[in-house]
Image 1: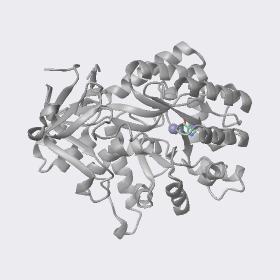
Image 2: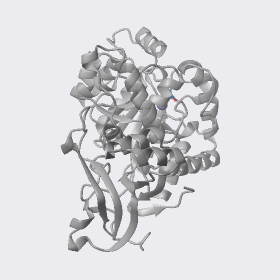
Image 3: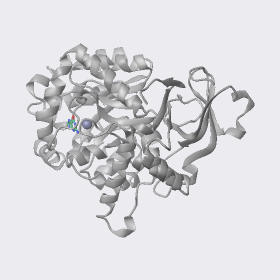
Length: 447
Ligand code: GUN
Ligand code: ZN
């Protein structure tokens, strides 16, 4: 039985998505092969996915047996901070206080490259244990934090996106975490892009922290770089909490809304991913859809900081791309399954405040789409990862239906595949991840 030899064929139940199945589980949007096969070439790319009985002769090879388990693409976490690994689960504060009291003192430690290196390694191993193979990651303002992160990700062969956090405006950028002048910051960013962008599986994301922590000149610089480098992406926070949104409108008096600040700065486009977008309106959604900018929906974080309930149905109905983010350390779990559990509840609560004719829920199929292909689309990485179309990089995970006694009991009573998948989405966590593969090679994790 092959484990690390490629080419190989992985046998098990195979599920992947071709597009968003929507609120009604569009049957043409997903493919399920109950006794399925995933054939991976010597180059670590998908060659074929389908029914085991239909596996073409030319794709036969060493077989890795995962029968009785579920094979899905690796999870994509569209918004997370590796720099907050030490202070996840810090008590009792709303966004502004939480940043000042817990986040900024922790991020200060990343001036030390050895510390950054150690935390980057711990963080990435945690993601792999949870079945997350790609993430859009915030380091800190220190260039060394970016070097440490990318070096550790490259060592593991992971597809990751990240970029130096830009912040230069006090008090939302404290003086001990503040960029020097724009020319120096721009030069640092250019050097990091040259060093890391498209270095193996790594891509660079220009990362202004949020509107309040950047000067107008720094936002303009971010926009300049975004337009100069045609496939570099942009990540930032937007409209996360009400007080934050009010502060943004108080500073940017010409702006119609928080998102309009980014729009006016030229930061909304098809390569932009905005974390949160809880406090936006239909006009904002329309601009996001028109410009092609994506949202990272971060349910555990929005609940933990009391930020509010993201309107998933309104965003998707408006045609906005949405991925799922854990946003640790404001988020409370590195597991995308746990994150889906909370996403389901956020959608239920949000929908309960609308007229009944608009009522939708988050189905397990749509949830798994968001956690895989939806995330890849939100990060502009769907030409590389996100499903099992031939030629895609074979990052995938194997889920155990019997990972815990409760899950095993519920799974045994499920009448349909969707019921089983929903039980996994609600009861699953890192214990469900039986194996994680990067480019067809199994990663050694504790589970
Ligand atoms: N807004 C600005 N910075 C941050 C951060 O680090 N976490 C979250 N959740 N929101 C932010
Ligand atoms: Zn965040």
